[in-house]
Length: 135
Image (cartoon, rainbow, N blue to C red; front, side, top):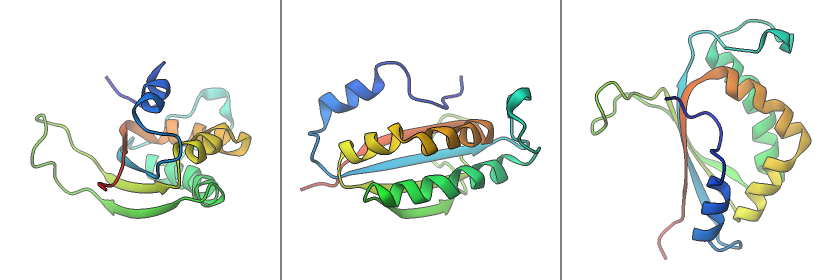
């Protein structure tokens, strides 16, 4: 089953595991739709999943920076060496935020929230994993 948005309660679980002022790294694994899957009433022009993710990325990149974050790594995924058979990813990103509070502030931003329609349309499947660097 595809995972495109946080499951109910998952943000609260993350908050219980990581102190609010701890810098975090968010690992993003992305698998794109060949064609973006916009809702019929959205009015967005048809495009590939990668193009739709680019639309999202224009806003998200700006909002990450406004939150004090930055993209640490963005690369094309080539092969999942250890993974369930058939689990492949197209792209991997690691985004750094100064804190979970900064990340949540970004998520609550109206412009960012509106741009997520492009992310959801772009992706066939995804993972978003909160990590911290070792002390």
